[in-house]
Amino acid sequence: MTEELRNIIKTLADRKATGHDGITNTAINHLTLEDVDTLKDIIHAIIRHQCYPKTWKHATIIIIHKSGKPKNKTDGYRPISFLPGLSKLLEPVM
View (cartoon, rainbow, N blue to C red):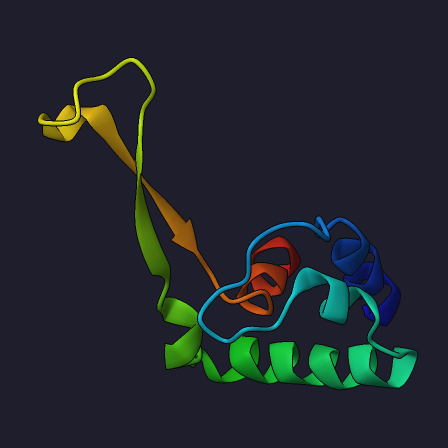
């Protein structure tokens, strides 16, 4: 599973915004093999105990104006959620 997790990490785009934890995808991409193995153990524990970390459930949400839409209408905006980088690794494993 360490190699599978390493492949998932490689798919993370380096230039994406970070979540509230401040851990960048670039930092995740630079994890050592030992770090990835530790992360694998953490993910296994999350699955085994069915206990998703509360901090991974929180997102930073910002509202972006849609071009060409009126600014005084709610449908002229769309939300963007910034999730913690490590939380993005759990879904593909499951």
